[in-house]
Image (cartoon, rainbow over all chains, first blue to last red; front, side, top):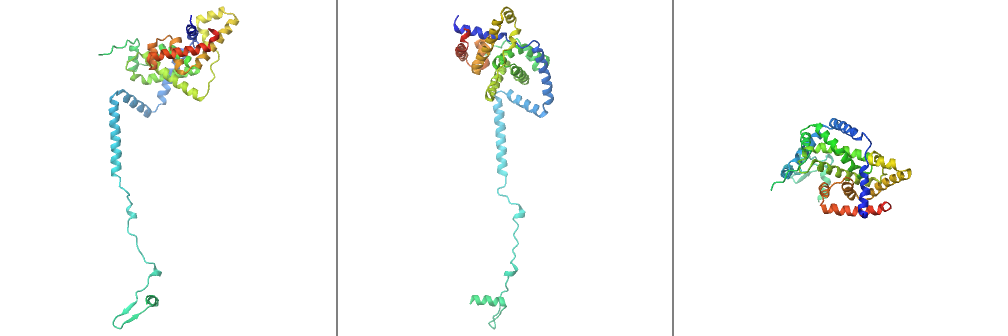
Length: 134
Length: 194
């Protein structure tokens, strides 16, 4: 007998290792109990997801067609959404013209000029202005 | 050319189970759990792992039963599920840490041939049987998962090469070369007993 045959014979001894008596009866009972618990625990949403998954896998080769169609639809929707989005939209409240007010302290009366007599009626402010001009 | 329909002895039970007959599925559990347990147990060398994994295997098979199209026998299909789940489990287990193996397995006591042997054997021989059993477990665990799988299916469960290749989705040549390599490794581990 070759060493390989001897090894095979030794390893084959392991087929005599069995679980304790009654193991498989308990096993089935536990399996049934577990199935019931799993059904109760599973939400309807996850059951729906699983059904969709199974349905999708059952489609065979046509699942690629369906998958491609779904991907195309999603891309189209995303593109259309992106196209319709206004660019740099500013709220109307922010584009109202700003009210411009000259600060009170910087408002100066314009010097009045009597063109016929060539005389200026000067206020104290306009006098200072005139001095700067001439 | 149309493919020949596969002659599956479990076709009727499977058809009923697919139609929602839970008793039919229970019959399949009863029929296949001993063989599947053997595979999972010899792959893991751990009783608790084997029990939990086998529960998961049947739960998964039940959920996926509608997808079973009969392209292989039900036995090959469920055996593939069990093998894949066991290999995944072992990969996770290896990542976690080196796990302590079961002590000398008491299951061997349940076999008639072994019981006879234990009655005849004197205490010294009995201790040698225990020692051998421990050594066999250690030697199997020293193999890679892929090599252990083919040894389990071929040497322990007596499966033909063709069926192993279907279950593992590899060629028969790969099955043979894995077996050859595994036997070489086992020879060096078990040299004291050869």
